[in-house]
Image (cartoon, rainbow, N blue to C red; front, side, top):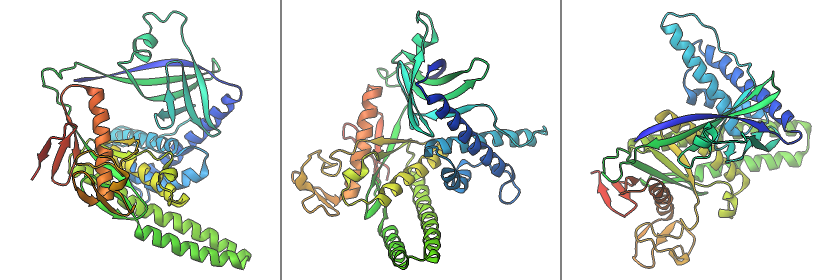
Amino acid sequence: MVELRRTVVIKLDLPEGADESLRGTVDQFKHCANAASEWCWHGDDGYHVTSKAKAEQTLYADLKDETDLTANLVQKGIRRAVEAVKSGVSRLKNGGQTSRPTFSKPSVVYDKRSATFNEDHATLSTVDGRIHAEYILPDDLEGTPHRRYLLNDDYEPRMATLQYDADADEWFLHISLRSYDGDDTETGSSTEHTTVLGVDLGIDTIAATSTGKMWSGGYLNHRREQYQRVRGSLQRRGTQSAHRTIESIGGRETRWADDYLHCISKALVQEADAYDCDAIAFEELTHIRDQMPKAKKFHAWAFRRLYEYVEYKAEEYGINVVRINPAYTSQQCSKCGTTLEENRPNGDHRFECQKCGYAVHADYNAAKNIAMKHVRRRQKSIGGRPRVNVALKSGTVNANGRYSSTV
């Protein structure tokens, strides 16, 4: 199966006030890219930095605080700089001459986390929130790239680059689309075999995988409670000195939590790599506090940050990261498929199927269900016989329930 990529350039019709929002977004995106380029070119020890993970771990928090950009756009700005630095280092190694990359062109890189791409419009994240931008398409679409690719269901928008043409005073969106040529499912010769690692998030167990690995949230919760007690004591004092100390504590708390989440995200990606996974499936985070009544704002922040860290670390391994609707994943038996509230009678860590008797840690069961949801969704999209599997402790299982041992 051959992957086909095409790019379609579209002029945008913006609502009132959107031009200023896009200009502000461009300026802050360039700030992220130039700041990252400066740091990567010299590094902390005088050496060039070409690792996206290292650059983001060092720069992300500060650049996120300095700008009004979404997390994804901050990451994209850093990654643009890293790629440019990589190219510069390659030229130097080959005996060429170059200098530190700088970014002055008015452009922003978007993907499906920071934009939505539709047949007649796009929504784009900006410093002032999302804007709705209509496409200006040719009156006669026949034979145009817009008809062949943008309006073709065989092509899927993946990302886009927003560019401003100063001479025309117009904004353009360069949308990159992907398709696959050659459906060989009938012959059974396809080489597309995908293995998925499922991840369930929680308060007591911050992350559990379909392979049985778990990371306790107890340490994170304990440290959080310690900071809250100290903060409460200082607030009761009400002095300027106490206020400064509170601000200092807040910074230390964020840095400590970031480091802890970095460690977990690294371990998650390594787990996926060890099982030859092509994808990591998380539960959808949009309404995470509604799904977890006991979750506090801090937990929602930690889950989002963990997802972001896994996302950029996984990119270096070529592993895709997806989000799945978690509905009923905590109540469904991952062995027989029975979904009952009674399978979690006490709402604790134990899952026990009332039909088949399967008993296991509830978060492990949920992680397998999350992975299987992605398997079935992916299986439906590619058609044909099962070629997508869930990574388990000692093997894999496909959408038809067929188990393959790896031991």
